Image 1: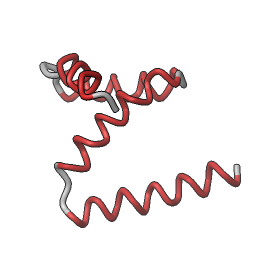
Image 2: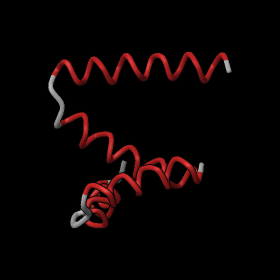
Image 3: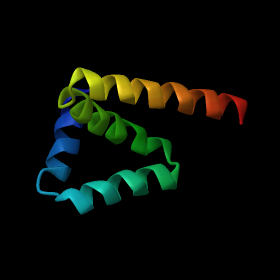
Length: 73
């Protein structure tokens, strides 16, 4: 991913509070627009880097279940 894109995304959310961050995530997912995927990727990167090993494992478990549900559904 282009570093400038990452910086632009971070700049756009730098002053957001928790409710604004949640709204950003929900809006991006609900819109279903592929142009939102890089932003979600940057947000996930931030979450991953702030998580401990147990939280990372929980995310991987949830991801595995989500993938299985998406493929079978």
